[in-house]
Length: 511
Image: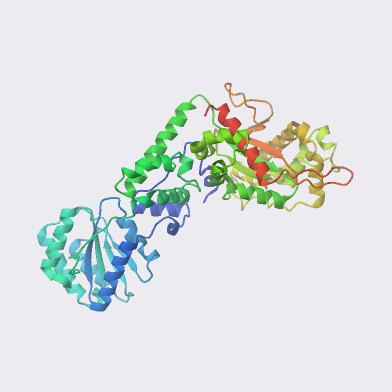
């Protein structure tokens, strides 16, 4: 994954990716380093049929042919291509339509030299062949002869969409070679129905998560309630995927139309704290992946909990079907802001009121910039690959104590702290060769907005990122300086802050 994909994989306006053909699915999975075994489902009945045919080939000591008949988009190619993932001992070799039909037998014979048993040769891209009867007869005669040779102990499968053609293949195969070519019960046709319809939504959701940066169908506005009627009117999984994509695009367009005259920001919450271990645990509990996106499933589970909860939960429950969609469009993320980064920014850019509470009151802007460039949120903001950025150091006890001192100001002087942090971000951007405007506590999103984000970062490529720092503590006392306090860095505290803060943006944008 390249650096631009790291920070821009899921942004407002991105379209839902649900490949309807196996070739596109395979390409998309490779591009996003997704595991196909997590996407593709086993089809037990069809797998059992192939296993039965392979066993017969071994017992009869000769090859077999079978047409796999199913509607376009039912998953025939996907099933055959991924069969070895679910059935040990099966080896699938595709034979493209660039190989003439009458050269298939020789091609199989050539490829079988020294090959293991359990070989399945699939005639791809011939779903609706334009082949005359004489040629098909010659083809089956060649197969009949091949199947009697040691190299011919193989299964040849022809995926077919057209029922009339499949029937013709069956009749000709039986006429030419009978059970020397096809199974005498099926006469060479297996009706492939693909996945049962009740599995469509789950497979679509897993596919969406695998290929869309961990975002499921809910994040694109097509949750189970909206998807249900689309599923009922779909004859194949491919049709269902297509309808989901169309519906997601329709919702995306509606969202864009609603906000034609508004700038939609990306909202990133920065949790500052005195203990890196506690920070990491809290953020990890509320996010997914290295891009620190919000764990939408956790938020939905919170809304679905039986207790009445606070007022903000009531507001969100009214938007229950939209929460994933809204969090994605606002690109909401949650990051750690470690003591090293926070304290260095305060020392270098804080005013007298901020620096006055610190033991060490000064640090260079260059040091603050280097610390900032090690922060994960800044790496994503500036497209810095994490492997190339400075390594985050564990905070010393001295640094944690310095953070505890300055954190005491947050109840009254957090604006001063936010301004110092904004200056550190701007300096780090400049040192990274990135032009951008960083403002703190001074402006609204646009003329129609009543909301003043803590920090606004505007990059030259048009990105608008709102940083919302929240200054937290584990509550540890500092002898003679800081009394013991409540731990405000817990999952519950941050979860509430996040939802309340994002609700402010949602309401301000009129969503």
